[in-house]
Image (cartoon, rainbow, N blue to C red; front, side, top):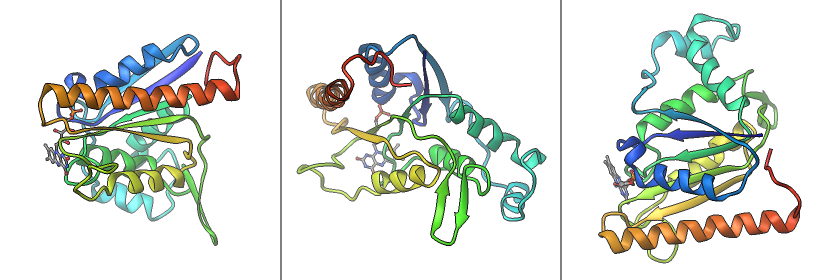
Length: 210
Ligand SMILES: Cc1cc2nc3c(=O)[nH]c(=O)nc-3n(C[C@H](O)[C@H](O)[C@H](O)COP(=O)(O)O)c2cc1C
């Protein structure tokens, strides 16, 4: 069984290029008995950080404190899955606001990470994580003409809770018409196939990532 969590954070929900490609990739990957959970952070938004959560997170309150209820749900959801697909559009060079609120709820001291003299140490198990970053322009490679704060930020944020096996799959140039979209989708699929092939060479008999 491969339990996959899709974290969708774009305004177009299931119509977004990123989401539709994530579903195609999952169908194509050949993973063992796939079970998918979908969290749509726009259709079911997380409220902005209020004083109760801010106080609770900085005053070492117990995990069952009321202020942590939403954070507990989101961290438990992460714990229950073997593979993660994060599907963010790039919004002004970084993660969309909806995804930032999810990050603010899953990175929690003494729950998903521990503070040590050497820095934060993640408490969640590592697992294959794919980030399909869609952008209207170009944010990666030779064609990029804008800064990309999304990739380094999300890499660091996920590592802080223990998730380090992260593949970024850019889906870029989406405002330049149908041909550009088809090319972007092809490039992302190639990058995903290359990952699957490398994975297969490492363990040819594995039918599941879990
Ligand atoms: C508020 C906002 C900010 C955006 N900022 C950027 C940006 O910084 N760089 C960029 O290339 N595209 C930017 N875009 C375009 C989106 O990234 C693009 O429309 C989106 O990725 C489409 O992909 P999707 O169909 O998967 O949602 C922005 C769009 C919106 C709505």
